[in-house]
Amino acid sequence: MKKLSIHLFAIIIGSITFTGCSQRIVDFTVISSKNVSLKIDKAQGKVVSGKSMGFLGLGVSIKDAMDNALQSAGPDYDLLVDGVVRQDDYFFVAGYRVEGTAISTSKMKASLGSKGFEDWCKANNVFDPTTAIVQN
Image (tube, rainbow, N blue to C red; front, side, top):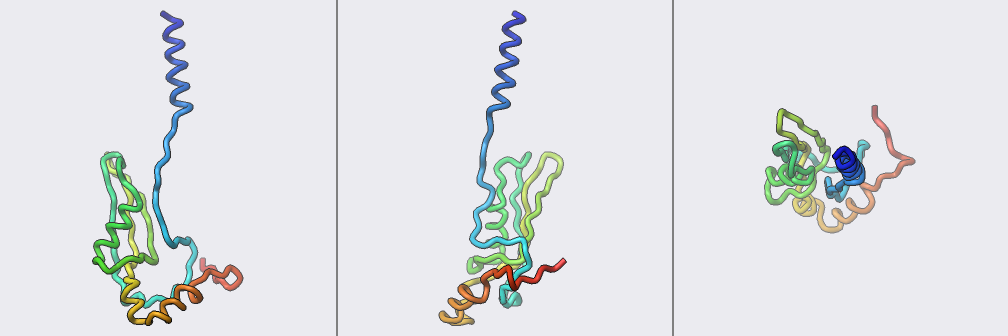
């Protein structure tokens, strides 16, 4: 009986040690932790917030929080700039909160024109580490 409990204990410890899981946290198109001048008229944007919360954090994701933030701005908004992602933990409830400025690229394209929007996408917003200004 003692041998059985030692073997059972070894199996449990081995199972815990060699098991794991992986989950997708977020999908992104553009992401940076540096201050980059995007030359966007933020007055056209809306300050938004979205969250993904759940019991013990089960089933929550940053992507859902970002989607909720963009959806709260309206159906035309598809770009989130100057964003902040926070992890919220409360008693039995955990999740993510995303805040930022929602921008409508279709409205931006209409105001800049097709050629101006292409130029904005290609040349004006490429990160160049030799000319970047780091702010403390």
